[in-house]
Image (tube, rainbow, N blue to C red; front, top):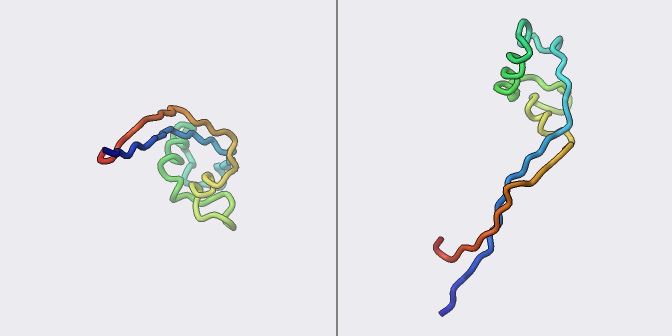
Length: 86
């Protein structure tokens, strides 16, 4: 009898990119908000906010995700074995 055996590998990757300075003077939607309110607003609406560099990006979220990587970490590595049908 023959049986196929597969080695597996899984892990999580954390990437932190270079910071992007958001000047609240350029974002009237942030006017009157506390710092905590601004952070929550940006987290929830970055895709709809204008980028700081409108020449190259469509929105703030895209610009943030294109910044250079400052730090990355792989954690939670697991190795395993599976067989056909699993």
